[in-house]
Image (cartoon, rainbow, N blue to C red):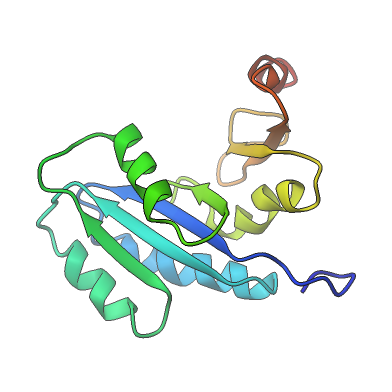
Length: 156
């Protein structure tokens, strides 16, 4: 629940991966800690491009404690199509995509989705390259139309 006592919508977090087995446990634990700290539930969908590096086993070890699952793509590759596959697999309407390499700080997840849920925006981008962003901290740029991009980058 938020500060006003409103129930927060659950979020689907899509994480495209390739050879990220070592980062998966850290990412999952930190993301779910951030969600719990914000009073929010969610699921994480790891979309892996057949890494064969232990990613499947890493997710299996976490699945008993967290709502996390892995989709292994054997015949398809690429970041964009992995994100779209994750969106297709999502169980919730509120969706977020983040990198597995921890370049997107997991503790920033609630801040990135907050403007969408409050009705201030239809989508948000968290980036080091927008106003308020820097190393290990992301700024949040939100919008309602395709013209958001120029404003975000110009405001930096």
